Image (cartoon, rainbow, N blue to C red; front, side, top):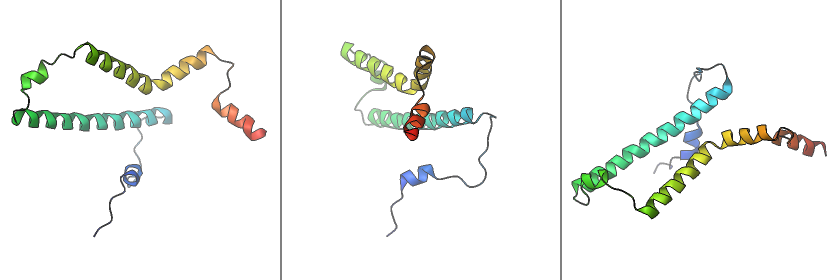
Length: 120
């Protein structure tokens, strides 16, 4: 019997050969890599959602028009809106943190705080 695959190890495994770089700035390159990973995850999610919709339609559980014409009620709409705001806040967290840092220029960075701990 073969060993089960270690999905976490495989996800973090380095591809063979040199990694292609498209931008001179390493930070931009990292952000692009993260965005492309999220885009890939979204693409897979959309394909799986389409599969579920197609199966539900084919089996007569729901009509395609029901999916297309669905309008959430007030509670559902509020829950969706709240989820979307929280989701965007998580994605844009770095932007918010940078805005806060600009507003408080005298506040030490986490790196400076760590250096102070090392010196103590």
